[in-house]
Length: 237
Figure (cartoon, rainbow, N blue to C red):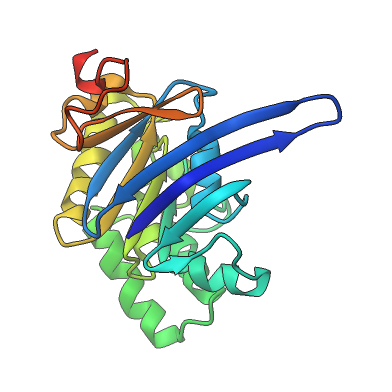
């Protein structure tokens, strides 16, 4: 599903170079649930940007769903992104639109037929427990409910991959746990889930693979428990 092969990303400025990621090698299987853990500035954001084609790596190759996206032409980027569902920390809902309209809009802009939208939107909102709140605008919903609308929007295109960027950053601990349970349920039907976060305590409550990034390098991976990195594994913190 996802392969990073000797990936390095360097941001260049007039007077300096910032190595955001250095020689990253990572394989995520189709249907896996993986936490990518790291503190602020560790390289998580760059890791995300490479998967979302917002940045291109300086060296190496990034492959998603069998397609090398390293040199993907700009006109093909939107089509590639439709295979992914993205959940953001700040929800990114349109405040004047209802929950239904927010999800429908994400489908409409990709030219999905109206009949399909009318069938799909109530279904995905029902999946996240908001079937009775489709007509509410964001300000009428709690933070956890807004995040669930964002998750429904990510599911609208039946993606093979869900990427969640700090999905619990703006919701309380109880709602954070519920969000992770929802993502686990989605994963249980074969959708690959990658959650990028710094929330160690939440990660340790779920028995999932944990990849830890520090200073632009993978320093531990629970899929490789005997890997010699010189660092403690994420589960030992």
